Amino acid sequence: MNMKLKKLLNDIQKTEDKIAELQEHLKRQNTLRQQMEDIEIVKSFRSMKLDSRSLLVLLDRIQKGTVTIQMDEDGGITVEDAKAPQKKENNAEAHRPPVGQMTEREVLDDEE
Image 1 (spheres, helix red, strand yellow):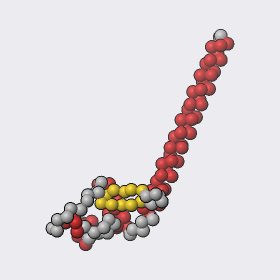
Image 2 (cartoon, rainbow, N blue to C red):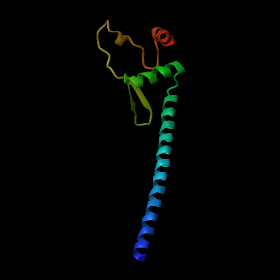
Image 3 (cartoon, rainbow, N blue to C red):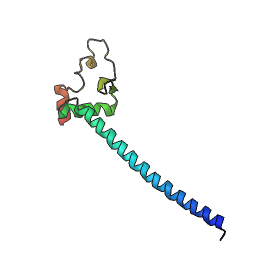
């Protein structure tokens, strides 16, 4: 076999091996990044010092998109209702408790 061809085939094999190794490394790095992000998310929610039921209500509202979360300059998070309360006196949304607190009605609805 031609020496140049043999050298080229060896070089191709080495390159493919290196690519496979780097892809595995990238996969491990992405997994590590995801784990570290998850830890930061858990820390942020734990710092809110909510009881279990309030935390579940908050997480449910986040999944439904009814609250927004913003990060401040200090790395803390702020949670606000996504819908601005309307100024009508009879509007039920205007009398809703702050995020993380539940009315007695919500507690009963969750238990059913």
